[in-house]
Each structure stands twice: as C-alpha cells, then as structure tokens.
Image (tube, rainbow, N blue to C red; front, side, top):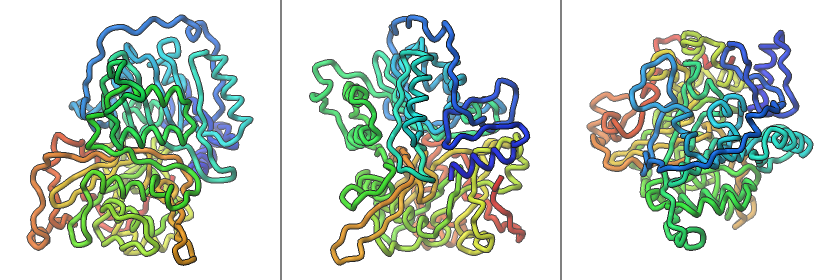
Length: 504
C-alpha cells in the first residue's frame, strides 16, 4: 500500500524529477516552501561542525507532566491553541532529554535535528529497510553525520508489500522515561507546522526508579511493560536499549495495553501475541470485553485504506469486543463500526487543498461497484476534523459500550496489512496462522470514571440517535480525549448524491 502511495506521488510530481528509490528511504523535505508532500530520496547527511560538538551534560529536574498518560493532538499553525494540542518540541523536551529512541516510517532529518540535534542527545532510529546494501549505506551515512546516531532495521519479508510502519518514542530524561505513541511521522507537516494536517499522540511519563530497584529488581512491570519490551526484542532493538527501559516505574500503566503487529507469519501460539488477536486479548485484560448482546460503538479514523475486505470489519469488531480469531467471525452489524476517511470534496475544500493530502491513501484498485454498495455506505463516513479545514492522518479508534469507553491510538490503519489475516489450519485440531505485512504499534487506553453512561438499547433507539444504541455519550468523555473528528460523521450517500473517497 505504501509503495503504491509513493509511486502515485511520484507520478503526480514527475515534472519535478522526484527520485523514487526501490524502497521508501529516509525522507528529506524541500528547503523552499512546498505542499505537504514528502520528497523521497536517500539522505546524504551534511558534515558540519555542529554535529561534532561535545554534548553538554543534562542537568536539573524534569517535570512528570503526564503521570497516568494523556491523549493529545498535534498543534496547528492555523488554529489557536486550546490545551488539547502539543508541539514536537513539547514532546521531546530537548533541554533535558539525553537518549531518544525514535521509530518512524518517514524521517526528515533536518526537521528532527532543528529541534533535537545529535549534539544534544544520543539518537537511536528505528527505520524501514528490506535490503542489506541500503542498510549498510544508511549506517555509513549516519556514522559520517555523528557518532551519536545508531540505526535499527526490523526484519521484513523480501518482495513487494510490508513496511516498518510503527511510530514510537522512548525519551530518557534525568528523572523520567517519556513513552510516546504518535500517528505522526517525523515530518514537519505531520506535526502541524504547515497548519494543514493533524495527528494524534499518546504520551506518558514514568519516574526513574532507585538503582536498587532497576533491572531484574524492577517489581513494577505490568502487561503493558512486558509487551513493549517483547516488541522491542522482536524488532531487534539493542539489548542495551531494552535494558534501559527496566530503570523506570511502570506501576501507573495498569489501565493501558501496548498493542502491536509483528510483520511476518505466526502460528497460533505466537499469533495470539500480535495483530488483532492481541488486540482482543488486551480488551479482555483491561476488563472491557462485551457479550454479543451488549451495545458497542466503534469509530475508527484512518489515514490510509488499503484493499477492502469485509472480513477486516468483522475481525476488528470482534477484537474490540474482546473476541479472539475465528474462521467464521461474527459479522459487524451495520453502523456499529464506522471507518472515517475523507471524501474528495472534503480534501478539496480543506485549508491546504489537494496538495496537502499526499499522505492520505485509498487503494485505487477498489471496485467502484463496491463503493456504491451498502457494505461500503454503512461502514464509511466522510472524515471531517473538529478544527475547521484540517485534514487528518490520525489512526485512532474510539470505542464506547454501555458502561465503558476506551481508545486506540497508534500507527495501524483499519486494514489487514496492519492487523493481520487469520487462516485456520485445514486439518482437525490444526493450529491457525496469522500473517501480517507491517510492523505497527499502538496503545489501548481505558478511560476511567466516564459519565453519561448509555441508556437501555430500546430507549436509545427511540431517541433517534445515529447508531448510538445505548453507549456512553460523547459528552461524558469531555476532558479525557480530544474528539478530533465529527461523530457520527456524514455518510458518503448523505443528501442522496454518493461521494467518492479521496484517491489522490
């Protein structure tokens, strides 16, 4: 899917002679004003004295600002700030961070280094690459740039498809570890610098433990911590980085689950630890599972839509209910899972127009007849930001039941490439297998003490609410999560004239 998107951008900008390599590299933006579409060419790091400076030691106390975590949206240069947004500098806190582990699909080194240069902090970058020759080139160029940059390339299957798509930051400060799970890549427009695009971020600050409680003596490790460490190990992140995580206090993460997808094929025992099967387990772990006769409403905002298969709706619907993989999953009832993706009209009327939508993707091979079918019209909504004129690259699911609400924030779109495809063994008693194309990661956040809980189903239906069916009302979530997109959102056939999704 991502390769197709890059090729599409290249075709549209052919006159500008943009070079598209065999696989997506580190991305470098233009130095002159340009639309929010990344240039795609291998990085050639500048050799400057600034990158060779001896770093000053980090001193002083670092505030624990988010002890139990917070969901934020990126700032927009075209909108007033309201406390729900955050800048990249506010996330990184460059004045005190000493080690930054950053996983990203796209990377603009000039943008990152303008805020956090290698002279200021050690950088450990987790990146996409399938080929050893490319990896060697990038390692050499990084070494020429600074001895304080190290690279990691998680394993991927050869051939087309499959990307290291996860976004994650582990930011080590003198008194805390800040864990950040954004939907944003390390690009200026994803962090609101152009004012045309927005993303969602989860972040939490974990206090540093006394030395005698660090490492093997850390008694604060929750399922969130263990899953995070296991994911880093699967990505082949250095042991020293994984060990450093054990220096911090995870006791305030019991209401969280670290959900992820490990690229590749997994047998049943391993498959339950990744993709949508792990999502289902996380829902159960947090005490959020629902029965088949209980009300549930899922609103999933996506930045890309790959090959559409009704099976993915069923798999996600059941996973968010806490139900594991099955060869015949319960179908997702109409309106109970809504996928929010912008229409052509919404993109063209946005503040940045079509030039700012280069990172939004809807598979062009999708059957046009499908887009006029009830299966599409019942599932998809025209994604419109609650901040006028913005487009969204966020990957975010808001799930509400009668008595609970929880949120997914991360890198995964609503697709099989992101969450995996389940195939049951044909022989009796044979194990099933999950195959996933991408590396993804995210956080499931249980929203405690929600108000305005749902009515009985019959009462809710009589009230005429669009698909709410007795779940927690949106106003009960005020102050807990930024409502970034309109809910329930307009159907693609609203007004009797079918819209079409943005396809570039």
